[in-house]
Structures are given as C-alpha cells and as structure tokens.
Image (tube, rainbow, N blue to C red; front, side, top):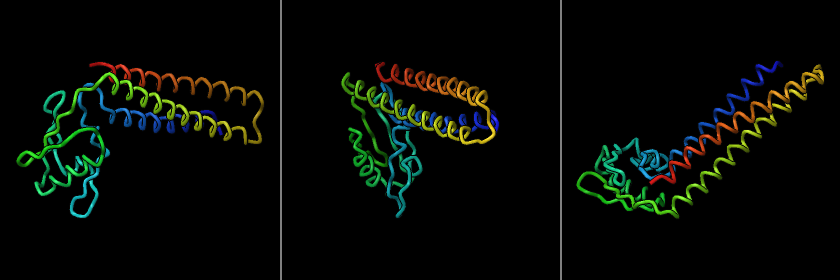
Length: 183
C-alpha cells in the first residue's frame, strides 16, 4: 500500500469530519438567524416524520423574525408542536395560514454558551481526526514488507497532514466564534 492511497483515505475521512463540523456549526444560532437551525426539527405529517423544510417554506423576515408557511395548512399545529418540542427557547405563533417566530436577541451569556459548545464540537472533530490518523498508522504499520525509512516517511507525512487538518478545523472554529460573538 502506497502513501498516496493512505493519504487519499485520510483526506476523504477528514472531509466527512469537516462536513459534520460545518453542519453542526450552521445549526448554532448566531447574531443573525439562519434557516439551518431548523434542520433537526422533525414534523409528524401524514404518519411520517419529515424535516420541517420538507413540509413548509421557511422565510427570514429580518434579523429576529422568521415566517414558516406550511404547504398544507393542516400541519400548522404539528409544526408548532415540533418546534416547541425542539426546546429552542422560541415561541411559535400561528397567524392565519403561517407561523411567525420572533427570536429574542442573543444575550452575552447565550453567546458565550454557544462559544463553549462550539469549542466542544471542535474538540470532538479533532478527536475524530486523531482516530482517523490512528487507523491509517495501524494500516501501514501492519504491512510486512515495509522498511523503517518508509515508516518514518509515512509518520512524518501523516503528522504534517494531521497538523494541517487541525489548523483548518481551528480556522473554521475561529470564524464561527467571531460570528457568535458579533452582535
């Protein structure tokens, strides 16, 4: 097994970690509303659990207000129930054939709490990168016909790649931290 193959495996698995972290960060509420905060809300519609964006149109009105327009007005109460169940600290209000949600302004305490959560997610991502690294290391160390020089080369290259990935994760975190702390 050559280094190119192992490097490709490492990068592919790392990309999954990056995608996971970016998705988790996008669902965190910052100073402005992002519709992705509703991604994890499931609505019971016609006997199936569907994502909120599959049963309604979500519109951002301004920095603190969202309007949700269900495709079927019979789903309004189920949507309200699902949003309340998600425990997001918001109160949906039915208005005619839509749902209006006013988000309270973020307090300093809330923003700091989100920063802590973002830091925890960063650490989880770094741990996943280390696990991927460990798997790659065991892959090439278990090869029988490999010289000590090649093992050293693999180690150096893998360490450099791991450091690079961790730096990219840190950059993503720093951008999110700045976003969370900005009013």
